[in-house]
Image 1 (cartoon, rainbow, N blue to C red):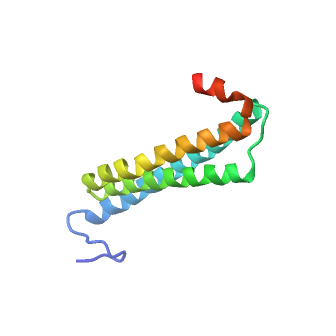
Image 2 (image 1 turned 30 degrees about the vertical axis):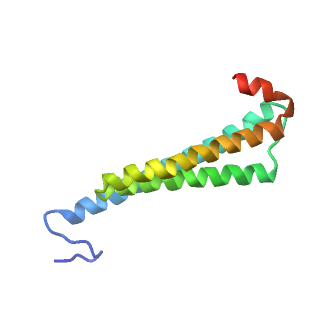
Image 3 (image 1 turned 180 degrees about the horizontal axis):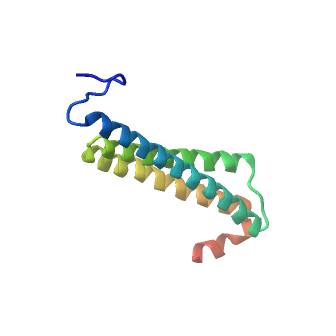
Length: 124
């Protein structure tokens, strides 16, 4: 028996599906807020070191932020749909790539925004 939304309404499945959808909206809202605060932190970080982020730095920040959002969405939807192995493999593969991208972006920004801070950043 199918409901209007195409979700099988056996044993309260429709209600469960609608609740999962509402949870995912909240997850995406939180992820958007985290991305906003990360971008704000990056801007304040650059200002505190006497530099500014150029458009290509922001492009790198956007790529890493979108990759991180993709990772979180992959894991969240995989767990919500009942596929914990897919969530774990996605976290491992996409997460490793995300960490590598973040490290490369940070090294690139530190070297181009604050050229005199190479030694200080390596110690900190």
